[in-house]
Image (cartoon, rainbow over all chains, first blue to last red):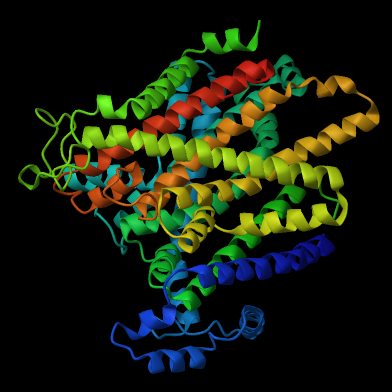
Length: 307
Length: 265
């Protein structure tokens, strides 16, 4: 098991290096001169050249790439151009907010999705099932930013129950978390429904029923535990999606997290901050994938032993 | 029972198909269907509520929202289909190469794809558009490229599976009709493509004003959200309906082509 973990962590390193490479390459291709932007409209060409030299931006790409990688390895993520603060500090301020949002959304997605999915599977083709399936189709089709805006209109504007944006209290968390979670709720409930239906068809469930075991017992002990594996895998994959969706949700709700930081960095051409933020996101993604793989190995003894 | 007959019996799928047809028609016949010029501003009538002269209301510049939504369907369909085509073609090419050659080329390609997939989904498309510059064509290319990794993985998986069966000699498995397989993969790719495109134009990177693009309309409508919510919500509704339509058709196709799965969502 330990070798498995170590191997996966090692495999993650080239992925992260690749991510940094792609980001730096893209930033290079961005139109607009970052340096000129920094100094403003009235900067002299001389000043621009000197700042460019100071930042090392005139060196060839590979040199800059290796330089950045070696600095990251030593823990130096650079200074944000916009804010003139260390990137690490900016990231440290922002990531708890994103973590909070993502975890809340994951919780909502898991609880609501699994509950709806199980109920749908236990009473297939009932009215509830039809509503749930239609609902999840809608949930999958609604773009996140639109869901957010509609929820704001309904719950903040018309009903005045919840605040429009920003962070600070639980009330502030509700709308963004629900918005972010909605597509995941849809997917999880669909997946849960099919997984539970699959298991309910299996022979050992028929046997348990034939033995006269109560329906609830059958459901709890036999069905759910085995249906859980694909559900868990999906939840793990959804975590990655949620992190991506957090970028949008944070923008719509002015939630002070990494996603919003990243979007602001892109528009301000603050490439140092952008690289740092993307790196953190990719790292989180890799870690989540690793955890999912690990738990998969733990839960399903058939899988466990392989590297 | 043929697949088409099964599809026809699925009412939701038929609804989806009808919606897609409506979308296609409104895109094709936009100049004749739209009641007003989508770019014509009328500052006196800005943010007009739905009803009367402007069936769905007017936006913050007094432009008719219904007309803009109709014209917006052109962009949406074009981008959705084109980007899906790019993603599928690219993915088909790369996936087949990876699956058939195997060895180090396969390994390199798969590592590359893992890297691309490690990006939060939006960011990759965002990065490509930022590099290419805003505009409809660039955004289409960006969304297309963004879709390539996912398609490549699927195609590669199918190719690998097919190779296995050849070794075993089970030609029956090759009976899965290739066009149906492609149809099953192109459609699911239109959906995320549409959503990503709408998102990109929401962030201001798609088609540029004054051309109508649903995502952009939602974004600019955000400014007046609290005083005139219809400006932002109506175009978003259009996005949702379009995506829903493709989802329904996709689900219907999947159920029709693979009857074993019918009991599942």
